[in-house]
Image (tube, rainbow, N blue to C red; front, side):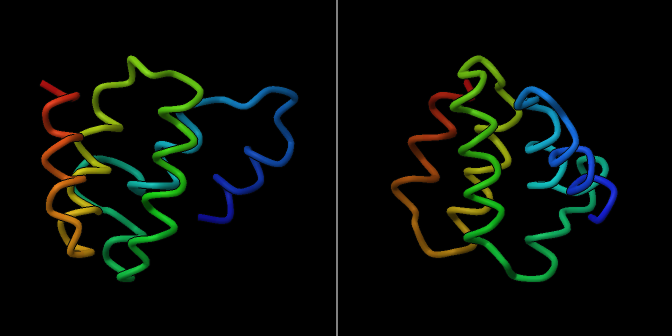
Length: 84
């Protein structure tokens, strides 16, 4: 997490993938924020990623998981539809 945070702070541009990786953790099977039950931060980072690149399909999928785990079923369904 610290490495990703440093990459974000040192980058001259906002890079969608940095926020994606911070939101989900390194790789698709380990979600740092979801594991820590910090669903809001996960949602925030993935929203930033989507705002920077609204065609980043995997961000919609991962954000839908965070919404679902946080009890926001409709938002999760909406993101799955965008992912599909």
